[in-house]
Length: 399
Image (cartoon, rainbow, N blue to C red; front, side, top):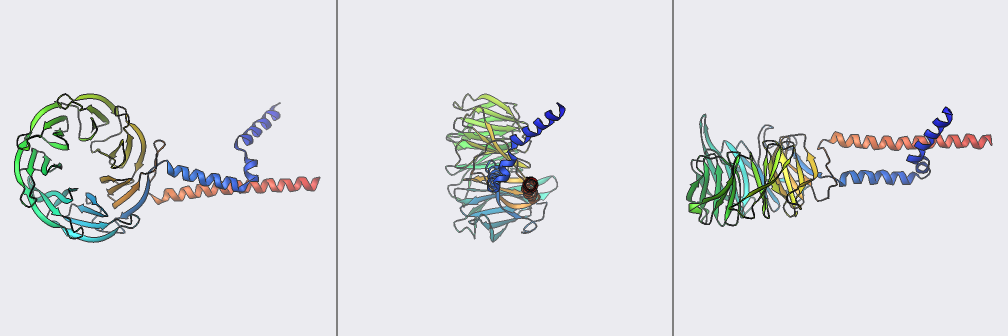
């Protein structure tokens, strides 16, 4: 009985995996393996290009960089005061086409708004004091940007800036500043609101400005008159650092949490839901451009894409991880552009739909391991095929 039980168990094992059927049709299992490989890549974002800092040594390894993209050109910065202009029309092979020396000891952020290049940074640094400035460039000739103006004030440090209707809003540790930049060459100072508050992030939409103060409080300001912005509502002490707005909902990221605020009535915002996540203190969230109902959240070593079709219950679609620290991230069409400690610019394709949380590494060793694994599987099946062939020959000889 014991022997019969063993035979029955072995028979069931072979029956489940259909090894004999696979061996008899070698083309079938090869096609199955190919489909399996394709499916494993289709269910997650795929890196399609990168400029490694060792292969393309524009800056030292320890330099933090920010960037933005206009058309087929990327403007990439570092803390040492230089902007590199990359042509990325061929995403598989970006090309350096120009450089911009910037008189800054530290570049904080590069942003393109209304076809103009804005660069914030520290002009001078002396121990306990520093002069923070915002430069505006004309990039109508993408390879040869022309400086238009320099804005300086008691910013201490510029954390974020936005523009709407030629009004520039600057968030910093000393409140919210506003400027009229109808004439880019002569910006006109308007006002300083929420003075002495740290404004870390903001979104301007319609007649309202939504911002985060002191990494804790959510404010809504009426900006109908930019010279006299008025606070209309707030939600205090929820612990948030970054925000994004989609339709009538504001998504705010805090430590380990994603807060969802209903802003249908800006005068009476309602905290509708809070979802736990693996977010860290330096999380950044933004909408995926040209991808409806997609929210992308950057953390230190990767990003996560959420489906927000149901605005109160975001669902994770996929994750992408990097083996190096991510400095800056932008989404354009179906691609995510990233700057890291190892790469000046990394491009990830997110056009394919995800089927769940997944991980794909930027390390080539993982791809080699995958190939070795597939090869081992093919060799195993071929080896099993030969064993069956030898057994069949012996049976034919005996008969």
